[in-house]
View (cartoon, rainbow, N blue to C red):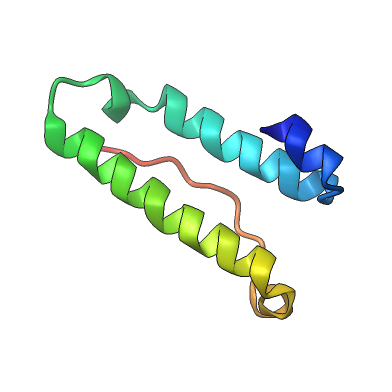
Length: 76
């Protein structure tokens, strides 16, 4: 995915942010639990963030209203 993003000339900071987001989700402890609610919560979060990501790409003017906040890990 990162390769395709580079081929489409997305800024490197956006690519890095996207990759970090997926790595955090992939390694999150909730993902490896037997509890389906935890897994569902991560999927719901991922879906919301995916929608926001695509909205930002479709409407770059929205970026001026955002402030960069580092990802904070989910906790139990």
